[in-house]
Each structure stands twice: as structure tokens, then as C-alpha cells.
Amino acid sequence: MPTEATPVVDLRSDTVTRPTPAMRRAIAEAEVGDAVLGDDPTAAELERYGAELLGKEAALFFPSGIMANQTALLVLAAPGTEAVIDDGGHILNWEEAAASAWGGIQLRAVRTPDGLLTPGIVAEAIRPPSRYVPQTSVVCLENTHNAAGGRVMPLEQVRAVAAVARDRGVAVHLDGARLANASAATGVPMAEFAAEADTVMVALSKGLGAPVGSLLAGSAAHMERAWRVRRRLGGGMRQAGILAAAGLHALRNHFRFLAEDHRRARLLAERVSALPGVEASVPDTNIVMIDLADPGLEPAALLAALEGRGVRLTQFGARRLRAVTHMDVDDAGIEHAAAVLREVLGSGTG
Image 1 (spheres, rainbow, N blue to C red):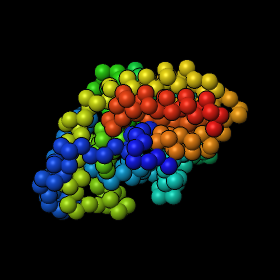
Image 2 (spheres, rainbow, N blue to C red):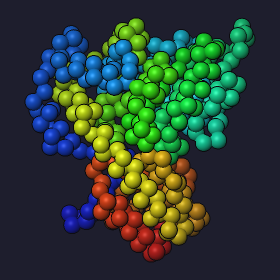
Image 3 (cartoon, rainbow, N blue to C red):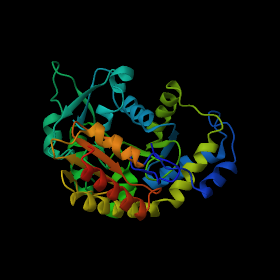
């Protein structure tokens, strides 16, 4: 295990960030009330500001992105209907089959070449009107796409996919857990991506660096229904301003860190690509996928060796590791992680 003298570079996820001193002050000084009763001013301001950033009529603060995603599905899809999603989607693979467990919603996984749905794929996946097949209620997009290595779905592609759904009378939900990263990478405001979706979820606790929470935004009517679903799922929070203050601070102050996270991801990929036995993806944003090309490398042993030297990654497939850059890791941390990986590979530990 790392010692006190060993620097720890934690690249497991952008969810591992610690609140900055300024964020801690905002939390400590937050004005609070009872959010369930509607009188927590800080939670209300977070929801108002989030809706404005996303170009929607209303937004709600949720304890987690999974609860926000699932609430969107419960609002948009009736039991016994089908949601179209790519086969690497977070809602499909990492949300505990919640759509079927809570809403009786069937997820129809479709294969894509790069994790990003296309108009043609969606047009084929949406069911035709028939008494004999499930009817499609919603198309789920993910931007950026986690399993595809933080890939950005370009705005024109989002628009084209959404147009196909609308033409067929099907709703669109955007899992924008890292939509802020897509915006930082492209220069396109989050509201322009969100405009193509009926509902959009944005995480505050990933690259933006808040300790807890996500926003779900949409029309006033959809958010009124979502308020009830959130409470039904146990997501009603009382003095939520304590947490909302961190989210507000993140939205107002932390966008500027994202471009640096992306630059550091490219730096890490460049360093890793020069090492023997491994191949690194070229990142769009802050996620680097590292494939173990050498069959002699064992993921578990490699991860343990790295952990022992203070570098933390996660396994993301049989022979793939994931590294995620974030505001708590600077250039020196990236260089240290690359040097440790070079040392471990050179020693044959993996």
C-alpha cells in the first residue's frame, strides 16, 4: 500500500475529488430550509440556475445521477414499453436494471460502432406500430459516453438522432452526466445539447467536483411529475442547501478546470502509448482507456502493483483499464502516474 511519503494519484474516476476550501466555505455558510416543503433557498437557487444553464423550464436536484436518470424514464415511458439505448450505455449496464425493476420498462440494446447512436440505427430500432411488438417510448443518449472512453456525440449527430425520434413520436432522454465535458471540449453550450432532449441529467459530482448530486431538467410539466417520482424513490431531502451549495459553487466556478482535465488526459494517453505492451485511446475529454495488448499482462496484478506505488486505476473490461483525469490531479500527478506505469511494466510485475 502507498505510504505517507508516496504521492497518491487517484485516476479511478472524476468522482473522487475533494471539496475545495472555497466549496467548503460555501457549504458551511449555506442558507437552508426544508426542501421537501419548498423553502430551502439554496436548493431552489441551484435548481433555478441549473435550469437556466440547460435552457429548460425547470430542474430538480437529486442525490444521484442514477436516481435522476431513472426518474426521467419513469416520467417519459409507460410500463410495458421499450427504451432504445446503445449496448454500452450507462443506463443499461450500471444502473442495476432499475428501469425494469421500478418501471416495467424494457431496455432495447442496439450495437453501435463507437458507442454513439446514429439516426439510421435509431430509425431501425424504433418499433413499428403493431399490436404484436412492444412500443418504443424513449431513446436514451449519453454525452459524453463513458464506456466509449469519454467520446463526445457532436451536436449535429444529437440533432439528427432526436429528429428521428420526434418524427416517430418518441421522447428523448439525455444522460449528460459529463455533459459539461462535452461542452468544454466543443465550445457548444450545454443548453444547445439539452435542447434536443425532453429531459437531461447532469452530474455535479463528476468533473465539476461537487461531493454529491445531479440535476434533472426538462419542461415544467415533466419536472412536476419528476418531483413526485423523486419523493417516491426516497429522494426528498430536507436541509438540502448544505449539498446544493456545493453544486452551485461547482457550476459557477469549476467549468474552467475541465479543459485542463482534457489536456492532461491527452498527455497521459501520449505517455502511456509510448510504453510496451499497452495501448491507450486518444481521448475526446477526460477518460483514457488503456488496453493490455501483451497477453502476459494480468489486469488484477497490474492494478495491485500500481496501487502499491500510489497510482489508482479501475478495470473496465477483461483486458482494459480506465483512467479519468480531474481537478485533483495536476501535471506532476500525470507524469508520476506514467512513470509508475513504466516502472511496473518494466519490472514485469503485471
